[in-house]
Length: 404
Image (cartoon, rainbow, N blue to C red; front, side, top):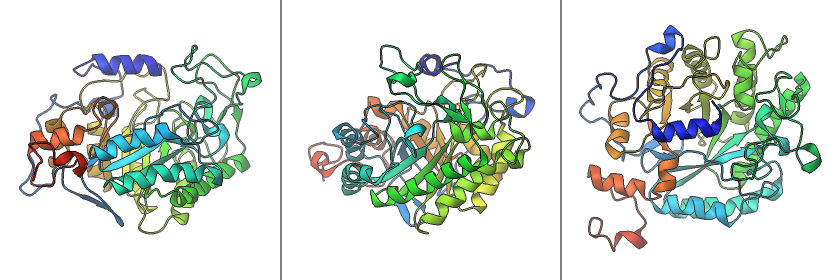
């Protein structure tokens, strides 16, 4: 399943489909497929603040990183300010900037955001200053696209096609000289020295992120991009210390986390987005994600952002409301680390139940926040919590439900 097919499926399917995944994965069910657990008295709700290290989010609602494909040479611009500003004013607690390339070759497209040089910092600071001034916490997702790099943006005449080298594209890289799709060159297989250089690039990007005013850092190790491609045996066929066994395939992730954690102040939370299952027999599994999450907790990671898929076009994904929430629930329970749930979370009661029933500590919304930047206000109005309304005072005074 390619990205376009997945998006169409996600938009159109209202209930879970059956899958052909292994038995350990088959126990997963989406909301409504199993009896819901009951929240205990005093359990947090969607509008309970969440403290991660020295940062307190005003609620449990986060904007999931969403590529805007609107940069030139990696620079943020007025579009990025507007994108974040609307959702900060609308009451989102944590706003995660899109997958941001730690190297020029780490971008998905030539139009993706970057933070591989100091010159990127001032434009990003305009984003973080507005978000912070309006009650949100600015976060950034640091990424390297790996074998999925050098693609045209989705609204190009040839969407997602490889950008030829003679037209400004670049050679993709990966753990193995193995293409994900059928077009483009065979990726360059990274040497151990080149892998360590990318780890250093993640750390340097984290330092720049702090200078740009970001208060939360997330590492993108999901969706078939470079980090995930080392974890998944479907993509990693190496025979050295970065391939083969579970420990070797997890090495790049753990080394990158250590390098980034070392440059972050103690008060700065560090998140990791994982594809918690490949949804394919022989691929990365939820059991693997539980184990690696235990290790990440010991390395100073504060929350696992639980997504899935991206390693294989043969994945059979049970798309439906809250379909990835069971991944977050199990990792939270068995790895002893906070988790974020993402994936077709659209309704206030649905999101609130995820928090109140202890399935995750944070809900991340993507397309729903594109449709409605003021979704947190809508949720607050529907749920009627005791907390203050999550909407800018410039608007709140004019609305009957929030006028004081």
